[in-house]
Structure formats: C-alpha cells, structure tokens
Length: 153
Figure 1 (spheres, rainbow, N blue to C red):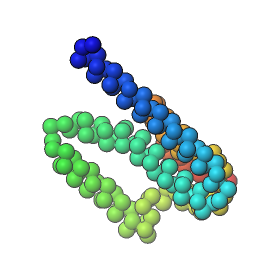
Figure 2 (tube, rainbow, N blue to C red):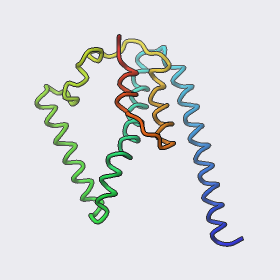
Figure 3 (cartoon, rainbow, N blue to C red):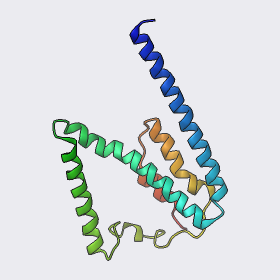
Figure 4 (cartoon, helix red, strand yellow):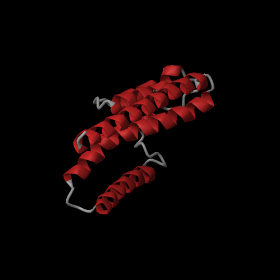
C-alpha cells in the first residue's frame, strides 16, 4: 500500500468516526429535547443552548469564515481584534441606546415581547435540525428557523 493510500484510508476512517459521533450527538440531543420539553424552565435553557450553538456554527461559517479567508495575508490576531471591536461597538451601541436591549428592540415585535411559558418538542429541537443542515453545508436562514420556532401566538 502506498503512502497516499494509507493517508486516504486514515482520513476516511477519521471522517466515518466523526460522522458516527455527530449522529450520536444528534440522537441524544433529540431524546433530551423530547424529555425536557414539558418542563418550561429546563426547555428554555436547553433550547437557548442549542440555538446559540446552531446560530454561531452556521453564521460563523458564512460571515467570519468569508472575512478571514479574504484577509489571509493579515495576522490572525489582528482579524480577531477587529472582529471583537466591531462586535463590542455594535452591542454597546444597542445596550446604551435601547435601555439594555442588545437586540436593537427587534425581539420586542409582536410575538416576541414575552418569553414562552410552555414548549413543544419541535420548538426545542428546531436548532438541532439547523445543526444537521449546517453539517451538510445546506444554506439556511438561522433567523427564520430559530426565531419562528419560539414565536408565541
């Protein structure tokens, strides 16, 4: 067996193990979502955890990945300083101008003015579906998928 065949075999085995771990994580997450959905307090935090991870993993690929790739000649630490300054300026502006609301009052619109008091399984599991879509490199709107799943009627 040649060196390149060994590398290819090793990479394939690694990606297969990675995919198995991914599906185990997804399966356990769906089971956990199903079990905690009736308990609003736990479901709220679990949904927030999944939504945070899903949005960051999806959006970081689309925005930060593009920014970093287009600035390869600059040192990585300079890119992260710039990104951090933009983030802090954006959040600080909203914090001071909208009385501590970092969402620019976008979540104060109809249906988002109060936190949900009960959850269904699909509301808690929606971010998990976003994680799956991101893993398979499918373009999806995180805002549409995540915010609409928590809309109160």
